Image (cartoon, rainbow, N blue to C red; front, top):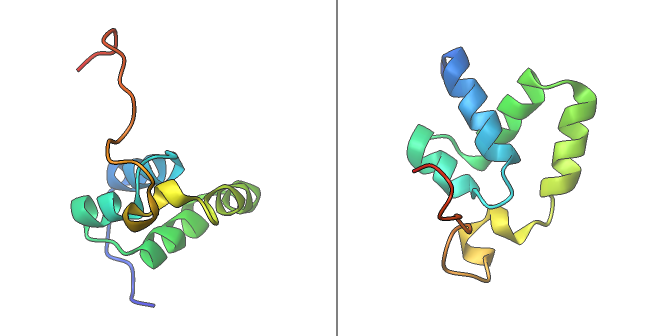
Length: 85
């Protein structure tokens, strides 16, 4: 695995947030930050508590929404008209 780049605390927080989101695919993280799925997993492992990391891995493993090619829908997520833009 490649060495992880130096990232700011804000960037790491955003990557973790995107990784936790069910409908944000790993490809979106790669597009925005240039990190592969393996690098995202390494960041999650390094910056999260072990129990939180295990819980996240259990959730993500096999989840079709985390990979664009496996998604069964075209649109991203539902956005309410009441939600801020």
